Image (cartoon, rainbow, N blue to C red; front, side, top):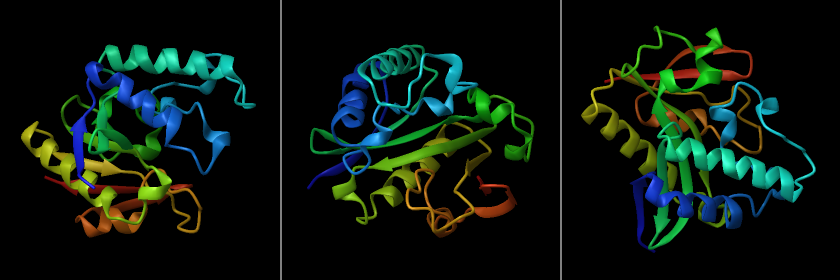
Length: 195
């Protein structure tokens, strides 16, 4: 097992799709077709979306994800075991995440570009979970944020630790890396690490 983390680029778009199409949700097929679009769409209604997992819905969403990656709007990190993508972390400039900047739940400071890097989602293939891979990803995000001139990193774990699918990363993961709880608001904890 050779686990390594690489930034998502347009050249790695095929790996992004390979992960989502073949490994991300082998334990929850109802989430197939996610492509992490929640992070950048104002509403799931921004594109044709049917919850039955139909091929049309998947193709529409896949196309939109590809456009966001090509435009450099969807950013983050792919996790590999050798050459096989086995994880994804959606992370980038807070100001680029439309659902976040429209919801004051997520604010500690103004959404000035380059100020705060956020972690929107961390998803590890089921057979790789529990191996501290999310720790490795979070450490890489923190290191890169410092090099990129960000002032802070934020994450938004669920307030309900018992929720079965902690796709935003569990609260204890952020605490382990020095993040502090800013506040709990409804379903989300706002965790922040000052750099």
